[in-house]
Length: 102
View 1 (tube, rainbow, N blue to C red):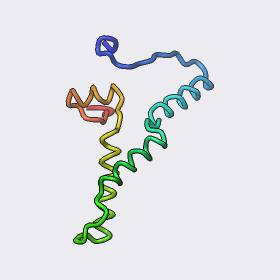
View 2 (view 1 turned 60 degrees about the horizontal axis):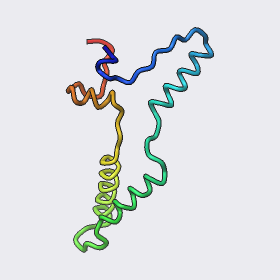
View 3 (view 1 turned 120 degrees about the vertical axis):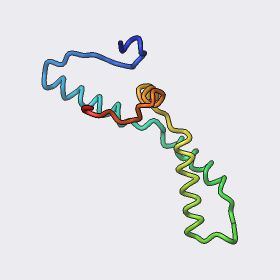
View 4 (view 1 turned 45 degrees about the vertical axis):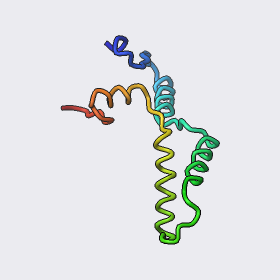
């Protein structure tokens, strides 16, 4: 079923504690990997900062900071990459959480 749904999967028999530990670290690194490199993130931030007007007399410093933060976060979210499994769940209307039971 997984092959026909084109899910990315890897099945491996783990028989030792050392193998289980290595698999745990691999899976943890894979799940939490950072997709964007530092230079890519700095480029995104510079584009977001360039879009904010330099001086608007009607805005306070706090409002200007909020606007800058909003632009930066929007720029990051627009460039976010997701995994195929997550995209498939979104397309099926299942959301991004996997419950342990129904």
